[in-house]
Length: 71
Image 1 (cartoon, rainbow, N blue to C red):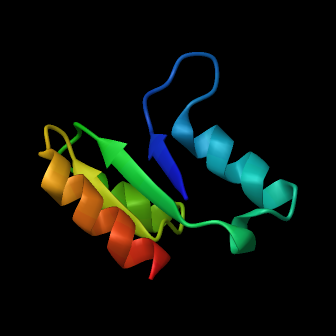
Image 2 (image 1 turned 60 degrees about the vertical axis):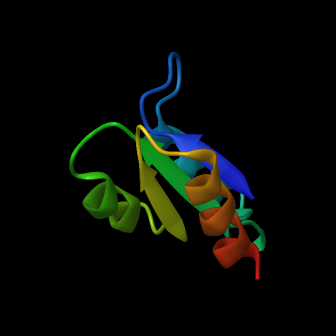
């Protein structure tokens, strides 16, 4: 499971997701997008993420989303 923030220095979440796909690794790992942007769901769908959470979130929300994505 990868918790992927879309706003990262040096390589943003979109570039990271593209690199995972390019290397053929995307199908073997779940990705949960984390973002403070109000369009988190749309952005997560754009990169084919398995789940998403809008910041700020509470730890139980994160744990529920992780469990859902790895089950």
